[in-house]
Length: 297
Image 1 (tube, rainbow, N blue to C red):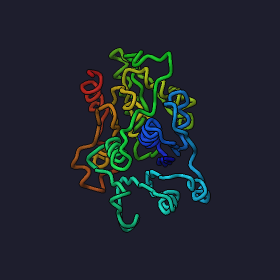
Image 2 (cartoon, one colour; image 1 turned 45 degrees about the horizontal axis):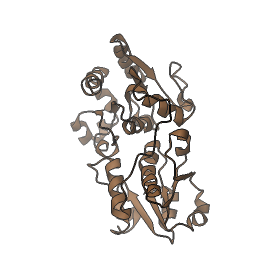
Image 3 (spheres, rainbow, N blue to C red; image 1 turned 45 degrees about the vertical axis):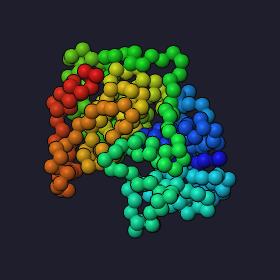
């Protein structure tokens, strides 16, 4: 069976759904994952499933004509709606299914995420229900690396894909100073494109370098972003700062359990205040949370 797994654009999404491709390959299938960032993990990727970039919208019919089935992480993009209409069997994973947007829900081929479960748990259920597969880790450490080699290094990722998800810079700096005073080694890490304004940060050139840096660190602190999911996958104790307490049960990292820093639950009931969530997570609360739920693990 030839299976295409089409991921959304995020790093976390790619890792979650490539684990399904890895399981399909282990079961003897010809599995291909479509993801733009995934190939950047280089030597970390488990052998087997092929990785291709997303095709252009106009080339979708030709690209997927040879597949026996397609598993689509539906991200509401024009590409996703085009794939959904292909004449081959398409199994669609929805973060939320809306009939007025996505059409009738097909029990035999559609899966709508349970909002109280993590994306990892939902993807695992999808793989089992539609393909009788149990996902496996999509990454494996290259030789020479030692898990948590630098036990007192706290890797801090202060950026994210969306400005609304970013905890203030001054809060991150204050938190890092507190860790430094207690004998830890806080190290900021950002993507090369985000390095402006973070002169003190490391900017790994590839996701392969980032994975190695995370794997050998003792702990991780960051916004709701791809590196947080990577820390969870690599079993690094972590804390994720998130502004949307309603969405975090679904979108929080779902492999190795970690801690969350969220605004008070009552804030989510008042739409006018939700965008001010950063005011309700002071550095002192994050430092205390991190000490109690991350550094003690």
